[in-house]
Length: 317
Ligand SMILES: Nc1ncnc2c1ncn2[C@@H]1O[C@H](COP(=O)(O)OP(=O)(O)O)[C@@H](O)[C@H]1O
Ligand SMILES: [Mg+2]
Image (cartoon, rainbow, N blue to C red; front, side, top):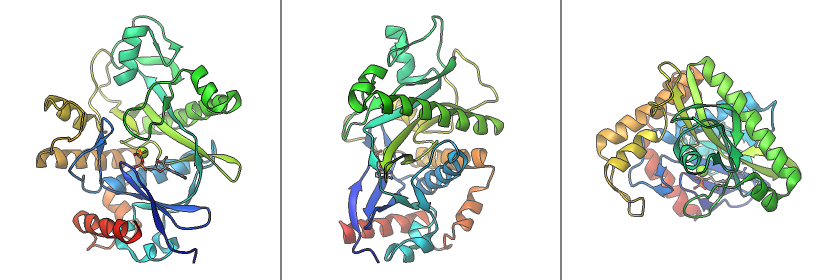
């Protein structure tokens, strides 16, 4: 074995374990964050949805860019993780990468912070856009709108030249090219299944000298998914992503500063359904088949997972 495992980081959503050598175990918990703050309620099955969708996309983009996945099969995990049923379907053995400190955002449609910046300044992250665009407009072509990757608090928009200052021109150009290419692949596959990918965020890193796609890919946490059926610019679209929770939080008049409010049970269960539905619509696979395929034992329900993941954090913290 490769020595004792150590909790290297607890992100907003993932627990990241250093397991020795050049590998990490990335565990997607059921935590949910909104406006960069972790909410008090876990969303049942959310971690498994994120992992299942990321795996689906890593496979379907591997010809565009290599990625960090080594295995999501629990039997390949080093001990003690191999014997943790709570990790089945939600953890991934990955190549440890030097993560590039830029959030690589691609937008095919105009909404959210992009729309806000367009209305105020006529461009998004320095990319000029034609006049007359409205909420949810499809852009003439997908654009690269990177942001900083803030350790805490909010990410700030970067122009392409600012990205060049941060990482160098060659790498900035490569990131832009890969971001658009992976977005286009995702948008094409999703549209065949009746889903519009309005925008999405990727992270890239270097492992063994190779530029690879890391973190999560085209999930409801990192993307805006709209039903293609009924899409109409000029208004906000219904979605299969976190927008439902953001809207509820906005209606609750929370100021986006901690502490965040408790989500009512019906908001938790509707959010859980939206995540599962995103999985099913995009992959075409029933979520409970994914759970079975990943060998999640029937007794591993989401509540026991909270307890097990907490114990792992304690034992390896
Ligand atoms: N292959 C990898 N190597 C190193 N770090 C990674 C890799 N994949 C993802 N990460 C990092 O692990 C963390 C994932 O945890 P997450 O909860 O998503 O964090 P965040 O709160 O920053 O969104 C992120 O900081 C991400 O950059
Ligand atoms: Mg993240």
